Image (cartoon, rainbow, N blue to C red):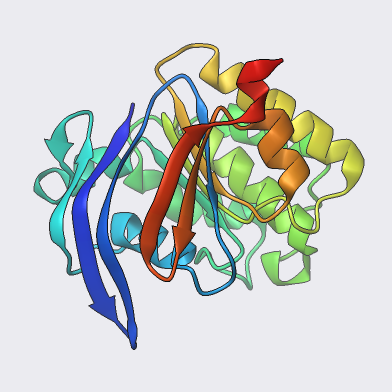
Length: 216
């Protein structure tokens, strides 16, 4: 499942994305880099917000996102510290409330991933930043996501889980029908794990290139 931005332009809250065009291919991890305020989170919101207003097109597998949004959301896993869940409910209570929105939600897989990731059963408001990201990863895997959008997810992760986390991502893209698109400010992650990198600066895509990973 790939995503393509074609001349995407939007203006919101005093900030603009300007003529954004690039492809996030399936079978690879594409990194999104840029300083704070460059537009990384705003770009993710154009995909996830059903009320987003932009010119140009965002394509999923060659089909305009806005024409089949509900269908595509079944297979998009968005993971972010800002992602909205029911914070005063436990992980399992959240699943009970939300699983009906997904045709293929696998509760057994969700529970096994919570156990594997050592996510406690308390309310989401009581989880650490890293635990909340792990919960979201389990949730995205449980509804069989094929496109993973990740906004600064590794900040706050312990080093042991971070290693396992990237192993999980590489396992996912090995099937070649899954794409990972993640923003990061950690240079080591770009060098070691990203196949491609897109640079944003002041709302413009400044470059897209293969990373150093390809040269090793």
